[in-house]
Image (cartoon, rainbow, N blue to C red):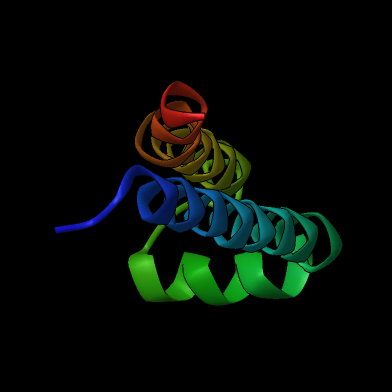
Length: 78
């Protein structure tokens, strides 16, 4: 059985790793929207005008999931 200290460490590291992934994803979307957008528009048969909304929707959902499933349990246990 896991102790509370182990769970706190686990959720702390999960939060840190997932916020790092979120930061990296945000930077990639901001810096390379043109080249990535062209590729994704061709692959998924989307209009270029739809891509920023799709990307930011993905980032928003990812951020909410990280907050709910990583940060909130960490803070509650802390």
